Length: 123
Image 1 (cartoon, helix red, strand yellow):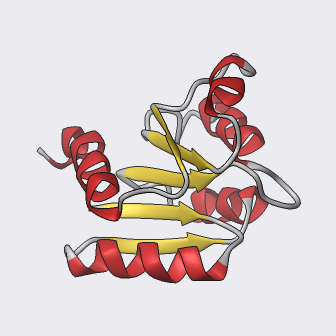
Image 2 (cartoon, one colour):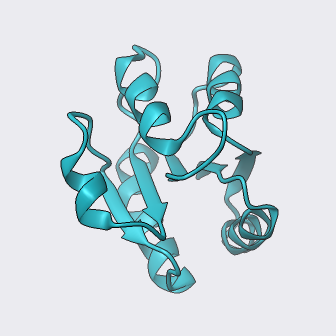
């Protein structure tokens, strides 16, 4: 499984990377949406994108919009996470996350969610 983790918090990046690598996933990190788009331009072979919503330069909502417009990336499942108001983000965009989860999150539950969303590409 290949996962792109997009988060401006370096502690969250380290934790998420360790969780997924422990399960033999390949994890690529990006600090914001702009960096994530650069990664996707070079390599769009991810099974899933996991992104924070509130980030500088390009937030998760803007990143989701760009991903959904892309021929190469539009079918990659995107899970968004935020400490903000989930209902606001669910209702504020025409582009919808495949799943939107609150912070803090249970890492075991998050891993299982990622595995289930990415599994369609792995079979």
